[in-house]
Image (cartoon, rainbow, N blue to C red; front, side):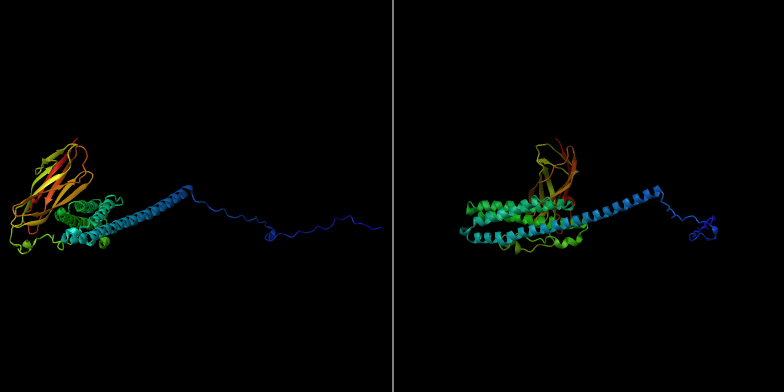
Amino acid sequence: MERRSHRSAPSVRRARPRGQEGGVRKRPTRSRRERALPPWLTLLGSIGFLLLCFAFIFFVAKSCVATQEASQVRKYVTGSDSVLSDSANLGNEQLQGTISVSLEDPASLDAAAIKGTADESQKYYLGSLRNEEVPPEFEDTHHYMVTALGIRAAATETLAAVAQGDSGEFEEAVSSAVEDYKLSDAIVRDHYVPASEEALKESGQRGDQGYLYESKPFMDYEALGLGSSSAREAGMPEDPNALRDVRVVEVKLAGQPLLPGGNVVLTGSDELAFSVTVANAGEAAETGVQVEVVLNTRAERQAVPATVERMEPGGTATVEVRGFKPGEFNEAAPVSIEAGPVEHEQRKEDNTLAGTVTFGI
């Protein structure tokens, strides 16, 4: 039989984990906890980020608006140039040839061609009148363009009506129409173009002046024998020493006299139309004398031009100026009327008359 020992088996020593030699027991290492930012600092950072985003969006939007406004101005200037150029080509290339042939041979009067020209002229006028994309800087300027195109359309329509009727009156109708065409040329040349240049200057887009319309007459009036000077006048040289003087002698508003520094009260039935009488107090005949009425209401400044075609020395002429928008109830709006000045005029104190207009019930 096998003898078993009663002694216990020798204990088995366990291997110590590394790092515990020497009897020192190390605690397990823990990952160090990251320190978080204070809530108030996080809030300020978020607010700053939002402000930065809003500022960026604001400047981008402002830049886009400025670019859009610049594009709108250029679109208007180039569009107006196209309309006025087409209108002038209509007169020079179509209407003038038809009129010339008709004046040489009344039997060849082409009423249908003149009517077609009148319809085209009316189209340009209505298109300009209904234009709703006029930049704010050109609101007053656009009025001159509409006025000039309206005068051309009305004169050509009248000419077409005469052509369809009694051909014996056609030559007289042409003379009357030519005077209206000259007036429209003066409005474009002396008012629309300078006002457009000023509007571009105010909008900071002087570089777009190259797109402005280059003024030219509606027709070659000399070729028609209806120029501004007759053969008799052409043979009489102008005296450079002659006294030149035009003056405003009378202004009536709705039939009521407007005195210097005076006031005219309008009622609901009164028409806002000025009758301006200009006198030539000089020693030489005056042609193309410019007359302008400026009405300053609270809403806007309204300037409407007119032209006195010719005044002999010592003579007078009266022009009707209308097309104004009335002001507010009980508003006293300043108004000024100016005639000339003409070339070489020295005394200009009597070229202007100023007063007020009160809009009553």
